[in-house]
Image (cartoon, rainbow, N blue to C red; front, side, top):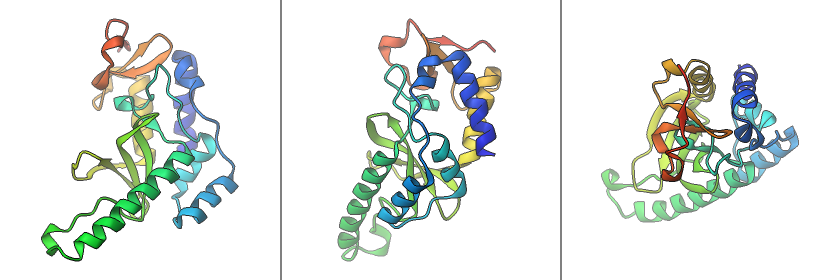
Length: 202
């Protein structure tokens, strides 16, 4: 499933958004994924493993990621660094939670959440995590917003993107367009791009 939908996405990017296609990192080998799992003490899902074998992040075409909201796939080193940071933050909260009532306890991160998408290639203020227990994506943010459920699996999230690129009239999550050779989504356009942004023809 992941391989098929990834082929649809990359074919579209290669044909229509060469800058975004060029910004995709190559996939990693299974040993790199196993090393990450051992390092962090987690196990990734089959879908995420399949994606990382195909691509291990996004450098950002036109300075932004190619995912809806101009978000970016996180490279493995960023996944590991952010996971550790969040687990450290949760350990601090757990210390404080011991003195809080059950109602007031704060959860900023769970050990079975793996960050996969960030606000931008170099901006990790918010993004999406994959819950390895449920298989669903959720949203995280450093702005003290509660983590929201996306109710998408990784496969359905990517399939929705492929559908929106191939049939822009069906796009409900965000509106795809182009700035030169980069895929840029309408929900979060840099003011410098506004005059150059062209929505995809329906």
